[in-house]
Length: 93
Image (cartoon, rainbow, N blue to C red; front, side):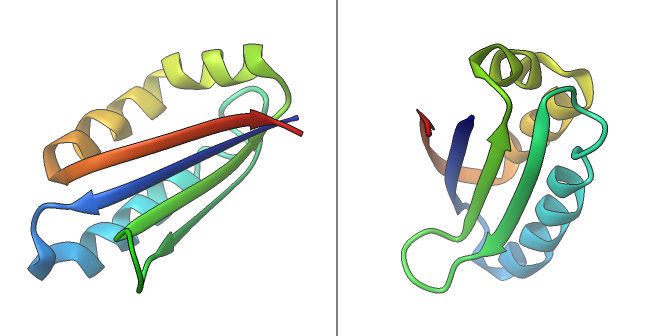
């Protein structure tokens, strides 16, 4: 199993709550759509980062497929327009 963790700092702090809610809705909706994506939890940070994603995937191959899954690419591209920074950590467990 792979854990995929992403932390974002959002650029517009006035829109952070609304953007975090939209990120949560869109990313969590990929469960059941993206092959190999077992779970996804998105939360609004109150210390450190603004938004965090913790996703579980079946394998490294599933992670690679998820990264290229068209609905996920669309979401990533939108997040890229609202995020100031992004940190990722992937590991096997």
